[in-house]
Length: 254
Length: 254
Image (cartoon, rainbow over all chains, first blue to last red; front, side, top):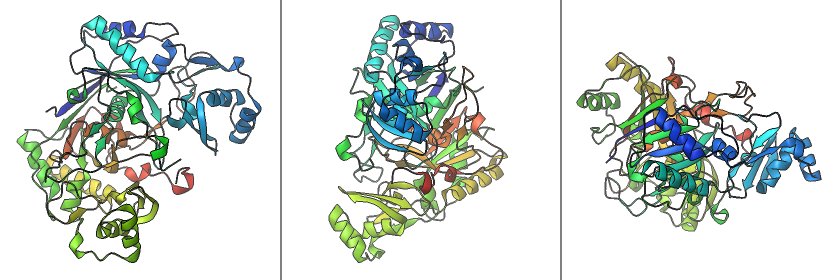
């Protein structure tokens, strides 16, 4: 049983631009550190570089806000063009008050501004969106990294999400591949042989959180290598981070 | 800048019972591994051993359920005595449906069953409560460990909490000392010199999540040592995990 875990930020990733081959850039960053990929490794990547490579960028100068966006923006004290991009990325707006716009994205994530973000983006009016299908992004990266290294790492794509009830944000998994995202202990027993009735651990989110601890929010360290989480790593891609989205019908807090 | 983090589960803690000197038991577990406490170390402890040492145990045989507990229990399919203990630990019940009881504890935590738990507790009818003041528990442990080792570790007391919107539980910090629980980047700038407007990282929760990755849910590894998080460790006790509770007036999801 693994009882030690290490998380290491990998410097050396250049500024990523649309069309870049992210897997090759990651391989270069690994090579610079004389690292390769070992079985059981988990690569955790801030979504922003994935989104940039995939061209998931919009320029506010190109955005024509609708009346709804203009009204919301006025109430929230935001740029109506930014609000329009948020609405374009949203299936539903859950809350719009006190300067905060909490949305359900087309993927089903509940987060502020549908994950649309202006920080760590070069260009005066550019905003970065979440990847269109972050699980697919993770699967693609995993497959290409396997071609490069002979071994497939588990891949997690992350973003920082706020939560209900608690201050501050946590990095969570918005996409993953090669990993069991939920470690389900239901039906297994505890140390006193009592059945565990409600214990299912969001392992992919815990790995995302662990990776964030070695990063800084200036965005210069998007890539983190975690070792010692072998027991959660799988041979196949697995269900992805979509398995972490609670179905609306089971959600008591909307 | 620290760019590597290690989390190691420390075996060797015996079954803890009320009145035990937890700091001494932790010191013994460290000594068995020939470990001591270095500056910048973070000790993460599952609350259950803290609660047991503090005698925060109730026996259902001693509990007389009120009418309200009996009614709730009937609707939820639960033991009315267990529900009574949950109500005793709660300031408010937010949701009671589909077998789930989401409460605000007297501390202000929002969680299932007010943190009252029957797993990993010896004794047929015993349930374990959250510590009465988990920040105080963390401060006390930190002070006594400093007496033993000459160096004070940061201490985090954890529990596994479910979340709105996402499946699975995460370990979070319900108490801490010697640690900056929130790393507030608001007002600082990103890599493109843009001001970060909403970035405040719940570091104590991320450390709790990282520690959980090296544990198993059978409860046999309550103690985890994290190294490499020095930049979040402080000389004084700090505001504790109470700083992570979002004030009710600022909470959009109740």
